[in-house]
Image 1 (spheres, helix red, strand yellow):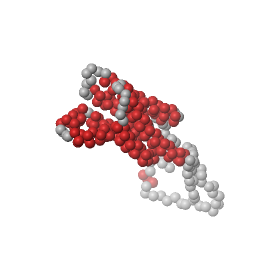
Image 2 (tube, helix red, strand yellow):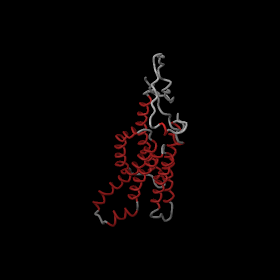
Image 3 (cartoon, helix red, strand yellow):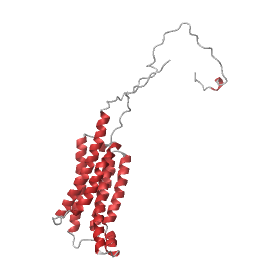
Image 4 (cartoon, one colour):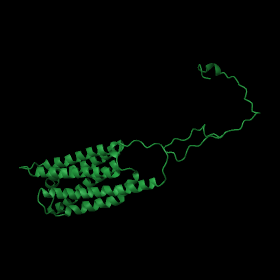
Length: 262
């Protein structure tokens, strides 16, 4: 007697997507872009407000930087696809954000450039590396955090082969830019450049992720119908007139069966 075999093309039903994963991909992309633009332009606006204070507080700019990272983490926790992705992306963003806030804090700059009493040559060598580390922490936290929150497959992380050099070149070259605009226009120029780097890195990960999804969809659509019942799929057997039912053999377990068992 043979039993039926389940349909090899059957796949479990796709779980219902969350609100951050509904709608056409174009709409989700537009919403993501609006969120990123709002974050970076709001950051530039905060710097402008602090710069116009008389006198400007020492920690005013730092609190604006901290507010940017808090808002970014909140967006990841809300806009992430799944709970695990939200939590992991928030943790990654907080790690890079903490490093960024330490590097831009007045206490760290006072310790490095004043308390250590370094020579002018040493300061000239150290200062560019501090600036590069600040930009690297910013780009890594934003790009990796957003990618973890919004990715659809692990294949997307192969984009690090392209994004890694992009972050390195941007962190190396952008501190060398001689910003000609005065405040507050310079804040918006710098934020626009940072936004372009972050969006470019995220798009690279999205393109790599899309290649994987395209290859997966080309494997052929599956069906969400459950497999046929195994009793219904059994072949019909011909009646054998010489077949005899085996004699019933009483066992010592018969007196233990529950009422109504047979």
